[in-house]
Length: 530
Image (cartoon, rainbow, N blue to C red; front, side, top):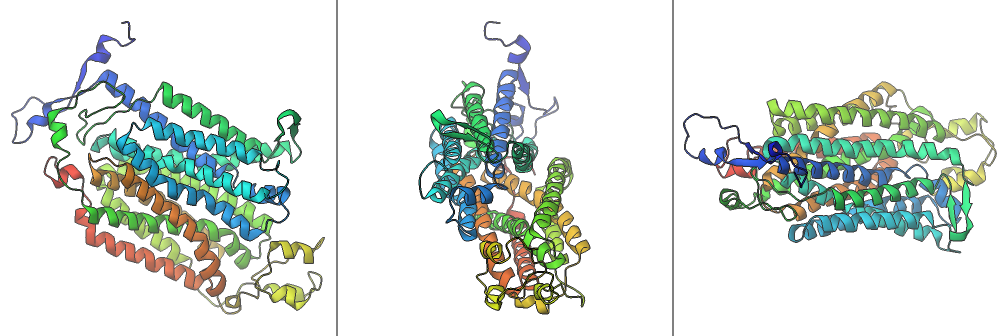
């Protein structure tokens, strides 16, 4: 054939209604669903969205381990507090951009916001590679670069909106799980790429003509920029916009010649259950908030409880979080099978219970107290320092390096945290068990939240709604570190984990209240059976 499609690929795919007598309202299920050509094009486009999601997460994680040393190298005025703003700027940018890109995708072809967001990410990565060039204010250039990378990652809302509109109800859970798996894979492989580039060293190679330094700090973002260009090419060359209804029938398709069926257009009638929408947004916020705290608290908790030095804490927790990431990918794949038997609501409920148990295990028990950092000073394991240096709450990493230069790093629970003197130690077995449980419950809740959300919205344009859901997750990632710096630092793990448990219990209670409302749009209006 001139267009490259065989006769078989042009033949229509029929819905599996069978040849038996029609029941009331069943006639529409016997309609032609889609041609082989449409089916293959639709799934190629979905795979491009998987790649886009993977690259969005790579953009966050590929430099996360090297931001602090690079920041110290390019701007000596940067301190640990500014580092927090640099890291948070990604989530702030994504939180702002997600509803905007979602709104754009509701009224224009989704290719437009996808290409623009990817181009912003490419430009932002290139800016990050050049933040060393200006004579001053380098840290602010880095802040802008990371915020723009996050702004470009706002296309996550468009990706999930497209996948929701391009899949039937029976395909939705599997597609959402694959999307989350690609996202998790990006978070895992990003630090791996960064580790490989450390072989280039800080000096690396300099291209003086264009003032480009190719080293362990800039090579990862330039790789990210290259991958972004490839993604833009794929969007132009492969991506075609398709839309199917909850039963898999073709609806309007902006970039593909398909006539909208009369039955499919009728399915748009009806109002979205906004109570269910708000409930899922809150539950999703709690899920992301808990996981952000889990990630943020890992290093300070293990340093306080097990007297691990900074280097060991980062190394061991890197291994643990890597293991949790692999566990999450396995869970993403398994829930696709389990959800067919239990349903999404039951899996979301079970995942929240597992997360609750994971944080409950972290509550301190027993009588053994952690090692106190002032005991090391008393035992002369580190040189003497003035008491103002030891007890000031503003004692940061930079001060420590100045006060104890060329000496052994102080370890243990700092006496400036008064709770260290009376809070029992969290045993390593508790910590590992908690990691395993949270790594089991979080991915299940993550996938089921997105899946239920998309089904509740139904055939309505989902761009803005997906934007708000993504924004709620970004807000949770911003507030998580703030929670750790305030509640954990001043009140200790008992208060911190008790409050998290309380929030998860509140989300479980909310889930019970709205449980019967968390159903697909078509099921709610009697167009399909659950």
